[in-house]
Image (cartoon, rainbow, N blue to C red; front, side, top):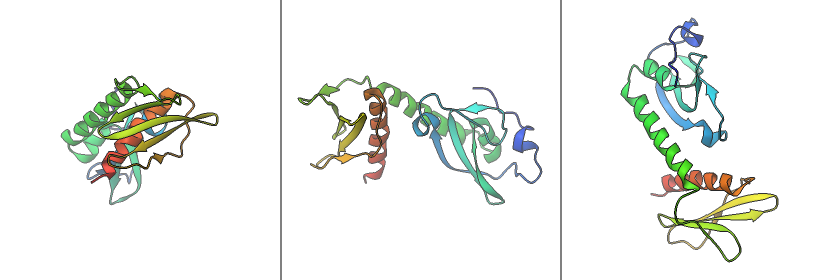
Length: 171
């Protein structure tokens, strides 16, 4: 990853605070926008980034989606952005391996399925694509996502994201 350069983009614009920002969210563009999709850091406006730190400041009306190095400068904290980046990289690694994970089987109807941490995940052919159904532990009702995927592999990546989301929502 290239280093963001303080002095470019919004760093050089008057009225844009340089310090006192806080991170209110962070995400991997591959999960939100699709594989191979990158963004440009909105603070330095020079570096292409995959892992986004969403920054907010009380004296600035817009949120900025920034890279790790700019986030470090904006927060005046080197460890928090690096910790977030490490979390995102770990999740990205687990997501990349999910489609090839041991345990995927094929149902009698020809649908790929797997059981992970008590969740039963099925990929079903629907119309011109594939949909994801997840049954939480101790439940008999599958929750079907509204998104349709072009390939089984894309649906498996989507299933990882849906599974992680469901785990976060379960107390």
